[in-house]
Length: 406
Ligand code: TRP
Ligand code: SF4
Image 1 (spheres, rainbow, N blue to C red):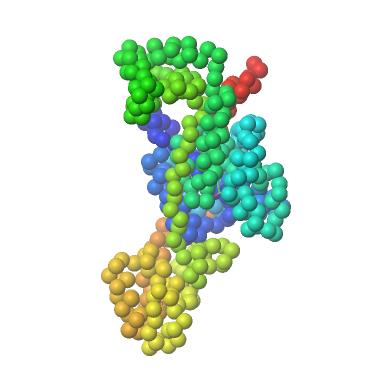
Image 2: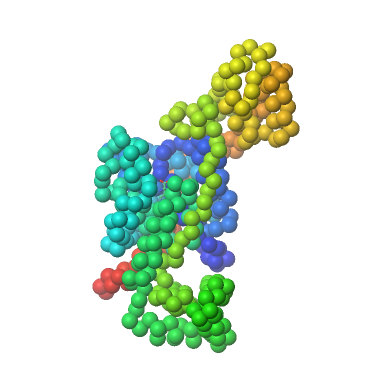
């Protein structure tokens, strides 16, 4: 996953708290998106077990027991360890070190004003969340992201504020530690190492941006640096910073890549969620799916087969919106209103579609279930690959902060 061609791909980091077996809501909300992104980006996807502990610290065993099942379902859904680095947060201790170092420069007020902080405390009243770890959890997320210098972070609406915090922390870090006493000299020396033609171009683009505010020149300058294979990492950071008039840019500011919320309904018409007990899991058998859909509630007006109904009042209809084409949907609207079809007739195409969707996932999951060593080795490799990248970042961070005592 680190072949030369892929190194120039933009990088993504995303994590999920271990909650055990995944359901169709996870699949349509997050997993399908990851599976798509793994072909377009260099992806680091991890099990956020430390994040889970910020709220589940009283029952850590439950968290630990969920990791394997969740990863099996990621793989079943189509995440490919050859395309994406899949790992477990707590196995990459660099996240914790970076979290600690970032905590030194992060104003308390930045954390207190993250909307999820008060929201979640309100929502999860049964838990005591007036802890240090819970307050700091968005900053842990910043460390997750910055350890890999991610360009983009796929998140739902509720997490956008965390990416925003990450940007602010990155900016503050660069501002505080990006300055070297001889920055200008080093940047000028790095320019000469670009080669004559590129050096001239770089200076021109720098002038256009700094004197005329030409944003295209800035973009072009960055692209030129990104494409240059001969620069050392340190020189590249200097030249990025020098281009836009700041110091060394150690952490690029990541962008949120907004993931649309899943429209996956549950079996009872509410949002699909484990806590409502209304899910279809990725490993449900054909018989499970059949039974769950057949026993789904329908429009209560249809007591008898001859009673007309209204799809808008029926949770089964929500599934047709996802799984059926428009001609099937038209005939269902008509058949329901005129009582010319029964609810079981109506449910059958939904059953068929879900069975078809789940079949390859169930098969892949069975392969991993029957071979636990496989998952273990995928994670071991992922942990190592992630560490190799995070270790390099931490090396730079320590150096920037003057913590290199060798
Ligand atoms: N905080 C996210 C959640 O609770 C999970 C998460 C942790 C994450 N670290 C991340 C997501 C880094 C994206 C990037 O859902
Ligand atoms: Fe629902 Fe279909 Fe029955 Fe109408 S026919 S009530 S849409 S299951």
